[in-house]
Each structure stands twice: as structure tokens, then as C-alpha cells.
Image (cartoon, rainbow, N blue to C red; front, side, top):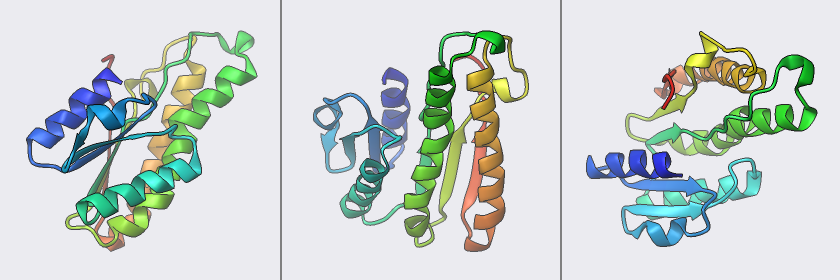
Length: 168
């Protein structure tokens, strides 16, 4: 939550109207101005993400950029000990939620001004560590999703970028 708040506020200071989606139930109270709004939701909830995108469009008159920073880093587990719950939760949050976001955002981005999508992946895609299979595989999948999105959306003038930060 703290990192999301900081990054979103930095974009807002640079002139962006921002809707931040967070699990924190107080996010709509923390951010409650005409150009900085919070929306409480689980990013894996299809209906909630549809509502978040629609709120952004209603509040700000459209959608020009999506920065997808949703992610979790599960506890380290070697593959031999990796439990199904950890694996599925990582894939759900780190990868499947991104598909949900794209599904609902793309129709509005197609009408945006200089539209762009930025995915936050991980250095683990290029340099995974032992015990991080659930995280690294999901972020590698996100990287591939971004590549496919870039190919599919280029004709619509939608830029798709992905960054792979180190430990933050």
C-alpha cells in the first residue's frame, strides 16, 4: 500500500488525475479529491475492477494511461515444497489480475489521448532466485502478456511498456 500511494501521488503531482485501487478499505478516504481518488478493491475481482475502470472514466472523462503495479511476493518455497495455494495465489494476483485490468481498460484506452499501459514486473524474470518459483513464473507470464498486448494494441496507437525493477 505505501509504495502504491507514493507512486500514485508522484504521478498526481505531475498533473495526472489518478484513481488508485488498493485493498485498504480507507483508500477512498485517504484519496478523496476531484483528481486523486481511491477505490477499495481486490484486483482479482472481475466486477470490482470493471467498476474501478468505469469510476475512473466517469470521474476524469476518459482513460489515457494504466499503470499496473499489483503484485505479491509469496514466502520463499523450493519447488519440491511449493504448495498449491501459494502457487495459485501468486498467479492470480501477479498475472490473472492483469488480464482482468486489460480486459476492462482497453475499450477506454482505445479512445484515450496518447494511451499507454505500463506493467511493473520484476528483475526475477531475468534473474530468478531459488525459492521464488511462484513469483518468478507469474512475473514471466506478465512479461509475455505485455508483449502480446503490445503487438495487439499497436495498431490502436496504445503503447505498452514493462519495467523490471530490482528489489524495492
